[in-house]
Image (cartoon, rainbow, N blue to C red; front, side, top):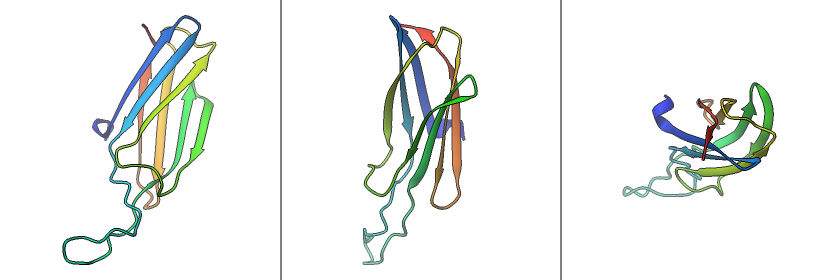
Length: 105
């Protein structure tokens, strides 16, 4: 399912910029469809990121995050070739992850 996520990690100076796009409907459970039926809630609840298998970011999300979330975060002390892995889990128990090596800007 890695095609549901895109990632880029680039070292610029001494800071690594990580950008992640997660394709997900992020339904709040409050929207109605064309038949006036409530669309069930379906949203990412947990996001984590690791650098060489060490957790560097953990977040709990709710229904206030937009469809297809785009996450950017910055790291210090990372090197070219280090591995970044981002994982999410949603309220239905579905999950996805993606991994990338840090490259030079």
